[in-house]
Length: 478
Image 1 (cartoon, one colour):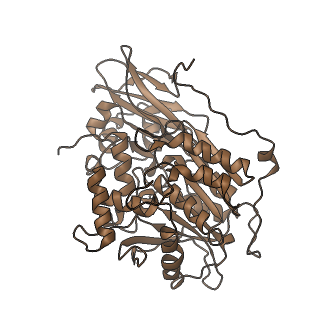
Image 2: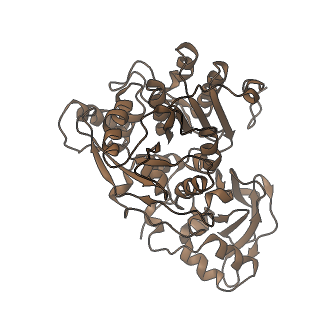
């Protein structure tokens, strides 16, 4: 097998643009707790084929007890090349397992702090360590150091999940539907695949709330697995959120030889930017600031789902979420149609100029949204924004972290019910997933099924806080 590691930008692009349902078994299996906690940063999918990952808890136990079975478990869990590059780890709640190949003992640096000495794995050139992590529900960082040189690691995308991201005892699982295909008239026959998660306890006689998850296949099938469905099961079981259906929508796809003006525009965009056609199609749907994609959701997707499930029709009971371009699209949908979508989770949102004044774009670009929030009529929205200082900087499209801060300050200054979670994370789905329990609880707090509307006001605690100020932390700026 021949393969190479992808750079971060290319890897995220691949994750965000592929239509995963075409290549994956569906529905994805619900793994037991711990299996989904094994990661290989930057590994292409082919590097992971043929492996049989051991649960994180098992690797941690074997390492702590210095069991000889650890070697075989490591070899069955991680690609050999990834171990050499120092790109793998496994974690469960507070404990994280690390392994790396090195000619001499390396130092493990976790959250910029040196950890206890790594221990040699007998009969190999591998070194292992178990790190206890106090802070859960956030992202962490690690790398290795040898002879004064840093190598390996993952920059602030090591997620430490809370108990609510693992199956709780007594919390029943729901059912993920088979993939269905929506053929859009708004987008000239473009096909978007979607599936619906129906939690246990859903009663078809009672209309249910709805959350639309953009780029849904990416989140469900990401490497290491997804905790999203477990979180929903847990929070419904604990009565922290209402009974709701989740709709996981993939980006649209268009055939290489499909006729029509839209297909021509997508191919031209792909050629001009040297993008894969799938990336161009996703950008046309999600990065363009218009009402086209919101109309696909409201006028085409929702009626299809309503033919199979009993949905609430009020925007008070509709949420939408996404990451990257999907985060921008989630906010744009709510902004264009606040009577239909009133609750938003926007992770690593692309409030940048990806589709500003392009031949398929509108006059406004994603970078204009902070000014639109300040200048246009107030919408009745509740918005969670998630980003980190390690997010993307582009010499062509702008700054993801700075523009998410601009968005947050605009929402604050105009009195919106919003929350900003801003750490050190990079451009990856971990940004949303690690705080997903907190995000959902905050988004659906004080929900009352007897109501169909509510005025969302900035809470007193947020009103008392100052606006966000920016400081330079990674270099001398004086």
